[in-house]
Length: 90
Image (cartoon, rainbow, N blue to C red):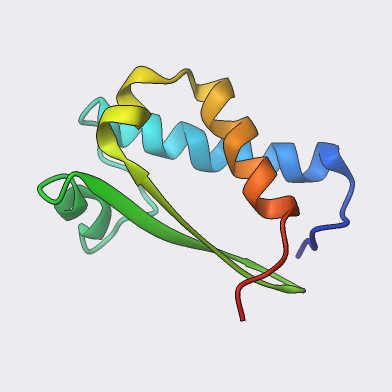
């Protein structure tokens, strides 16, 4: 498990996996991380909200599906890394 002070390479690797899953879902692909369809169901609301559990707390991120579709996977990953490096939500 990581913290906000973990090496940036480790945080980026995790963020890339999250961004890849979001982009895949935006393209209509089924993703393994969504067995009950919550991510798919969030498309009708226009945004997805997810948490990243880290040793120093949870990061809750909400993103609009339009933004996910328009941004590159790398841009999404960098946004997620920024959120991971911020203070935890208690």
